[in-house]
Image (cartoon, rainbow, N blue to C red; front, side, top):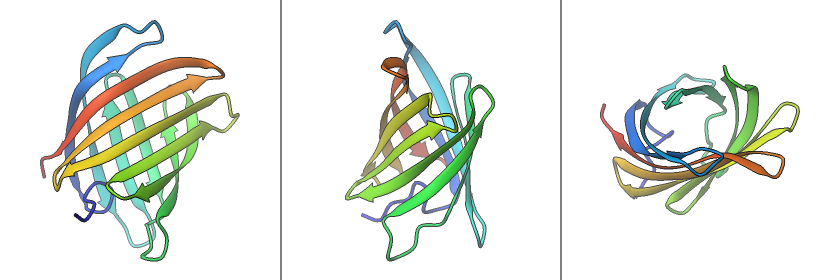
Length: 138
């Protein structure tokens, strides 16, 4: 199955559970809009009160990875990489000062559906983690 998230323009809706640093769970929603330009791809995403605007290099046929940079109003600039491994798109990232780091796995379960699992940390302390389902809506 060919990846649709990131690789195709469109809109995605997300729903699932967000855990805070105390482990308290909250049902949450989110989404993403993906736009392709000739020289870059842009992803505007949101989950609960968190927003990110990613700019990434388009994946090439030879490379299974793409570098990205985002502006997150709450924490500033984040830089990371997306890596395709089979049915998963993996991501790792860090803030410019290296204090905030995170990981995410997006596992494709159908052409228009992904399962996202991720966590954000500050040093050794996990600040948040999430379990979300993304569905392509347009």
